[in-house]
Amino acid sequence: MAQFIGSTIRRLSAVEVDRIRKQYPNHSNPKWITEGEFSWLHKGDYINVPKGFVCDGSSGGPDLGHSFLIHDWLYATHTIGDRIITRQEADQIMIDILKWERASMYAIAVATLTKLNPFWAFSRAWANSKGARIIEEEVSLDD
Image (cartoon, rainbow, N blue to C red):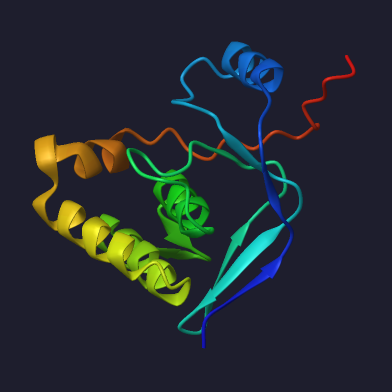
């Protein structure tokens, strides 16, 4: 049984994006941040995304549901718990989540793109991941 457990995510403001880019100049395109721990139970394994994880959403597509969050986490860490996973496993988990979220047309598109892997985009993203970007202190507009 699949399910989401936990917190929410929110879109970063322009000021927050600028601050994150200054602090982490290699971060691709920060758009979202988790406001607390976020978990996805998938086939008996918990995928836990910590508070403060910054991700760029769905590359080239709409940010539907939460599949992009879990996918970005898996690409950043290459693990589920202590188990190392492959890029194909991470991609399949995103497809499974999209189906669970009833975004079946987008799931078909993602499945096709990940298999075709145009310009080696998914392979490069997997190989070039620099690890998870977790903001320890909340990036605030009040500073």
